[in-house]
Structures are given as structure tokens and as C-alpha cells.
Length: 127
Image (cartoon, rainbow, N blue to C red; front, side):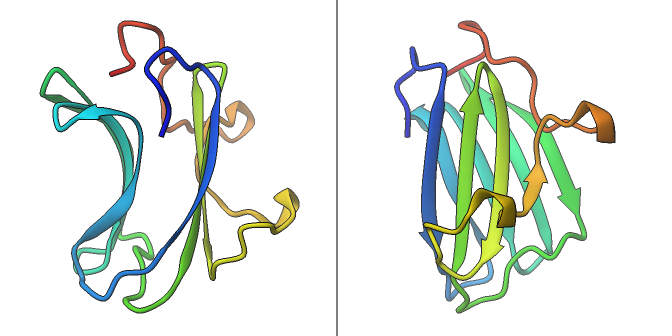
């Protein structure tokens, strides 16, 4: 989702997996060597946000030993890129119209909490 020159992007996806591998969504996808992707794993419970530019992968954020996901369960993934900052929300179920106050942030720029899952995405850092 998102053209390379877009600075602000918001999308919602419902995911379900019947396998225990990685599952996720991509933003600014150009090809297999240029994208930003949020993904979750069931076999090795983890969630992560990674960026690949010209084939070089950089981990922007990861949460090993996170809940990952449950096979056969729907998840609503929301990704917001606003002024170059990414925030990812993950909620069980597939309620794409839930009120924003109910969304569960898994990573994002939150200076008051002292963590971030992204760097500024300028023209040289966006695939």
C-alpha cells in the first residue's frame, strides 16, 4: 500500500492464517528488495517492523516473545504513516470500523513512553 512519493498513508487489513509462519502487511512495497513490512509469527511468537531498501534489511522495531498470533483467528491490522512516522495497531477480530480509542498500539512513536518503531522516512529511506 502506498506509492513511494506518498508521505501520509492509512490502511486497515483483516488477516487470518492457518499456518504458523510469518504473516503481515507491507507499506511502500516496490519489489522484494524495497518495502516496509509489519509481521507476526506464531511458531516463534514475535512481532516486528522491518524496512528493506536496495536489498538491505533493517529492523525498525521488534518484540520477541510477544503474543504473535493464534492460527485460525482473525486480526485487524492498522498501519498509519503520518509525516514520516509509522504506528501499527493490532486487534483480535475483524472489526474494521472500531473506534480509534479501542485500537491496540503495538509499536509507534510515543516519546512519553520512550519507545519508537520507526525512524523518519525521508526520500532516501522510503523504498
